[in-house]
Each structure stands twice: as structure tokens, then as C-alpha cells.
Amino acid sequence: MSHVSEDRFDQLVSDERARDGATLNSWETIAARAREEGLIRDNPRARWASAPWTRAAAAVVVLAGGISIGRWMPTSGGSEPAPAVAQTAPAPARFTTVEEAWATLDRASAEYQSASAFLAANSTLATSVTDSVSIYRNRLAALEQLMDATAAARENAPRDPVINQYYLATLGAREATFQQLGAVRPANLRLKGF
Amino acid sequence: MLIDQLELKRAIAGDERALQRLWSQHAPHIDAVVRRLCGDPELAADISQEVWMQIFRALPSYRGDSQFGTWAHRIAVNRTLNALRKIRRLAKLEVDIEDDSALVEPDTDRTFVAESIEQAMTRLSPGARAVFVLHDIEGYTHGEIGAELGITPGGSKSQLFKARAKLRKLLAHLVDESNSVEGKVHVARV
Image 1 (cartoon, one colour):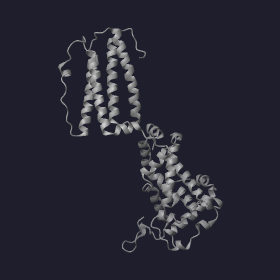
Image 2: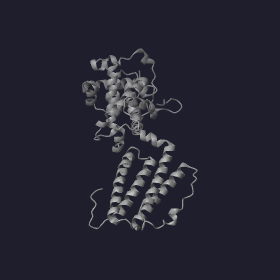
Image 3: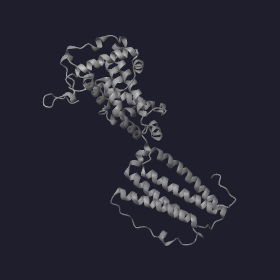
Image 4: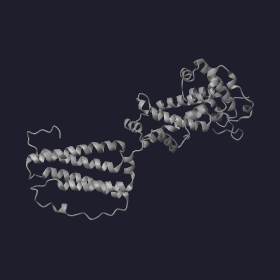
């Protein structure tokens, strides 16, 4: 019986080495086994966030929360009427695609952060300096906790738009609060914590 | 390929998407070595499941000092050889590596025409196939193979020499493409 030449054989071996081929099981099969053994732990938060209606609801909460925080921020004199732009309720938006809605949400979030920063830079307080420092410190402490929670959530789900919105909104509010606190605190008061 | 630490943490924490990404990235190569060592697709599919469970279980022990693919590959080889030992497919090799009975050409081999090296490998004894796959395909040294299979490096060399000779016989009909004459000689696709 003859043999294939050594060169040809080496070529065949080399081809085989480079050939990976199809997987032996589907991911569903592997995942089922892994789940049985407790190697996959279902993340209820991820499941919650993936439901379209909960994502939409969360987005509304982000916006409503942002608006509430923005309105609650002290303005000059406390009794002056709010600027016309703040009194005008925006017309209900009609979206035709999910992408359009998220783009709007992103824009709104960015505008909210920008408005917060503006307010922080321009507002004066009717209340005493001591009260306002206390208010901002309390707010900062709360926002820090929110930051920790959303940052942890982002580690588990970095691409989740709802969590990212919460994170960005919190980041913006925290930055604005820092600026406000910086503006009202006495020069000899140094921030060491909340 | 270096694995992202955050991705690893997620996989260790049981995040399905992180585990799936690891599997998608490495399964083609890991499953290939399992399939070659087993020589039987159904058995290989079963063993592959065990291999992946072992990889997932061992994730916390991955220190990142070698590439993830290399680390996972070692687990795949060890787990597959252990599984084959359990079903006694390697018993003959370990009991008597110098025994050529594993390579004796049965009558069916005289008429067997392998279309590819993978098909030809199925005609090797489990032990000879393991030596050939580990050395020629996976790049293990004879010393490493000896340690894996519980044989001497010399025994591994001897087994490899015989395995290659048998494979070259089984693939004899595959003519060198460079020497073929168009229209006269059929070049088998592999």
C-alpha cells in the first residue's frame, strides 16, 4: 500500500490545525447545564430592565425626577417668578421610533444637566447660608448613594440605556450640587464629607 | 487573547451574557480539540459540555498569567483525556504503550478511504490519536504528552511515528496537488 507524500501530509496536518469547525453544542445547551449547576445566576435587575414597558417607565421617572429636582433648586429670592421657559409645559412628543425617543431623552438629559449648572452658577439663596449648606450636603450625600448604586448597576449592564440615563442624570445633579455648595459655603468651610 | 477583567468578573458572578461571550469566542477552538481527541461526534458533544462546565467552574482560579484561550485549552485537554480514561478508551495506551496492537491494521482499513485527515484519525487507536492530535495539531512536546498520558516521552515519539505512518497510508489516494496532471489525476478535496 502506498503512502501520501510527506509534504502533502504535512500540508494536510497544517490545514487541520487551522480548521476549528462548528461548535459541538448550542449555547442554549451549555447555558441549560450551567444554570442547573448554578454557574449562571439570572439577574432579576437585567430582566426587569429589558422589559420595554419598564424601560419606558424608568425613562419617565428620570425625566420627571430631573424636572422636580430642577424646580426644587432655590432660585434668586425664592419668590420671583420662574423664567417663562420653565413655566411652559412642553407639548407631548410623538415618536415614531424607539431610537428617536432615546435620542430625545438623551437631549433632555443633557439640557437638564446644562440648566442645573446654569442655576448653580446664577442662583442666590433666600435662606440662611447655614441652611443652604446643610441642604446641599444632604443632597450630595443622597446623590453619592445614587451614584454608587447606578455605577454598580452599570458594571453589570454597561449598555443598559435606562441605567445609563440614571447614572448621567445623577452625575449632572451631583455636579450642579457641588457647584451650588461651592457658591454658598463660607470661605473658611472646607468640605470633608457629607 | 487577553480577557477583559470586568468581563471575567461578570462571568464569575454568573452573568449569562459574559459567559456566552467567552463561549462564543473560544468554543470553536476548544470544541475542535475535544472532537479530535474523541474521534466520535456524539461522545465529543457530551464531553464538550463537561469541558465547558469545568472552564466556568474554574474561572475564579484564572489569574491572567497566560492567555485565556491557552488556559481554557489545557482544561479541555485534561478534561477530555480524563473522560476518555473513564470510559476506558485510553486504557490500552496506558497499560502498554509499546503494544502495537492499537495500530494493527484491521481488514476494514484496507478498503477505507479517508476524505480528510480528521476522518483518517478516527481509524487510529484512542491513544495513538491522542498522541498525534496533541503533538502535531496542538503543538505539545513529547514530555508534555508523556505527563498528560502517563507514558514516557520515548513512548510518545514511537506512537507518533506509527500514527503518522498509518495516516499517510489511509490518505494515500490524496495525490500531491503540485504533482497532479490536470485532467488525468483527481485531486481529492479535504
